[in-house]
Length: 121
Image (tube, rainbow, N blue to C red; front, top):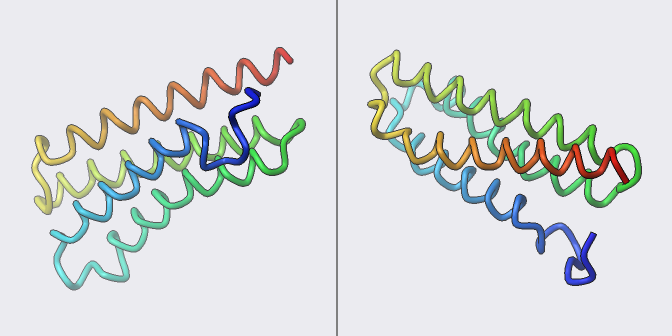
């Protein structure tokens, strides 16, 4: 890890994961009110889980860091799946989620690269 990284808030991957989470919150505001405790809550929890697991893994460091990054990757896939489900339910349109999916893909790739780097060290 670089000297300039004091804590998880300095990590680009964490910042990008937070950006995905904010986008998920923006998108889910469009969901019907009766989804408040259903899909809305589920996709928001998954989105929050991504940045949370990146932060927790960074704080723990050691051999568990790649494990937490892998959990974050799984949560990111869950977010994408749930957004696609929202499209299937006509809560959103495919263009609505395009940017979020692009950002999610970037976080997913960054996590995979970081896992690979950590496992070599």
